[in-house]
Image (cartoon, rainbow, N blue to C red; front, top):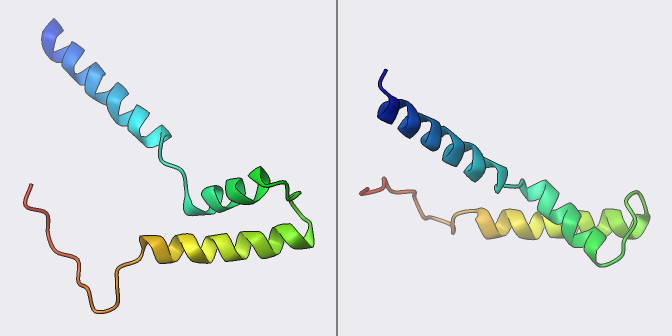
Length: 74
């Protein structure tokens, strides 16, 4: 493989890995929300906060009722 193809492959692999690192899970985001306002992991208040934030985030990322996903035009 020539140098330019190898360099292009390496750059694309690095970019793909970097984009995956930025993606957190819904669970991690809910945990971050609750710990950032002062709840300690394991406390009753934290558990209530976590459940509520997890529910809210799942609603945020779900499709509206009756809406069907459509294929991308790209």
